[in-house]
Figure 1 (cartoon, one colour):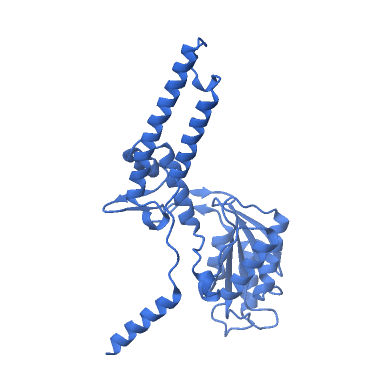
Figure 2 (cartoon, rainbow, N blue to C red; figure 1 turned 30 degrees about the vertical axis):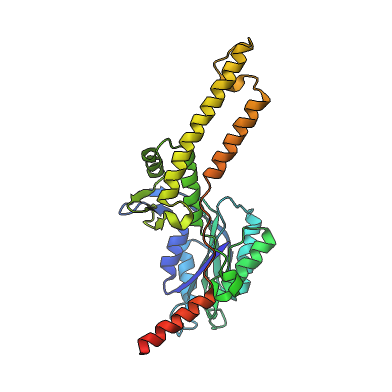
Length: 324
């Protein structure tokens, strides 16, 4: 689970984003209706305008706080789903962890992405006039996410690196964007008959393919990822497509030999090869080719993480050379 936290000045802007339907850019047309579901209200009630008024009334109890809005997003990994009562528990635990459990806040679930995620909009100013501290908020959020992953059996995501041990820093972090790209590349390579076919199928999935001395992929958010970063360099992709062609030819040869063998034995030859009674030798050869193909489609192994001690030594050398 990933948690993001920010503070701001405008309850109207934050509540509008969290509660309203999603509209198309530069248009009044609604792209996604009923995207928001209110899970529960805490110390507040009503529609958007009523909530804005209530939050602003309490913010006046401490006008020294320049950013009374606290906005938290909690995102589960793609494919993970929790029941509504468990989502409510997540939100209540988050409020307690961040210290605004007695303040005004609203918990909202969104349906506009392929992964389940929640929004909490809270008033940092309480009814007692005190303001909830945002000090160490990232560290608190990381600790909270690790607790919830363990409690609900969610996919574990490493904490921000400044808060974890040296050994853990060398473990690659889960990057959902890169993991999704890797899976799309693997699927496209499994069906592509040539490089142009592979590039066309990637474009159909919303990626721009940038090919030069290497290969990069640009997603619909204009985020660029090099193929070499995720184990699919240009050389690797070309190697997979070339080897795949050889394996497919080998499979056809095995298939043809099995058909000829059955024909010579006097068995009826059917058009649908998959429905024929195959020999154990053929099945063994076929399974071997399939396993080889599955292994071939896997990305190259990434290099082990850089030793942080070596990085420190290099930085010290650079500083000394600058002073000289």
